[in-house]
Image (cartoon, rainbow, N blue to C red):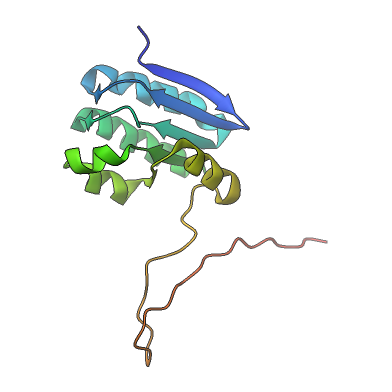
Length: 144
């Protein structure tokens, strides 16, 4: 039985992991699949079925993400909200990947801004008491 299903939707490669536990047994498969998706430039790894990700599976995704990032690919994850309360590894995932809680939210983000966050964290600015919201806007250069 194939536990990782591959799709292509609107130019976005989708890797859906249909497992409750993503472990060392599937680590090589996800790594190979993600490397095969490099030409798509936009990748969603849907982990919404997973309640647990072991360190080998996570390491395979991080290893591949570094290669993809170097090739100017955007890769985002979809995880379930219940995963947040069950997994100690969530902080590590959120520190490396852009994380969404629904597939369509992730797809929309990739189609609008290539998976990059649209806002940065709040920053304190001199002589201001309230935080300032910093917004990143895409820049298009006119080459005419």
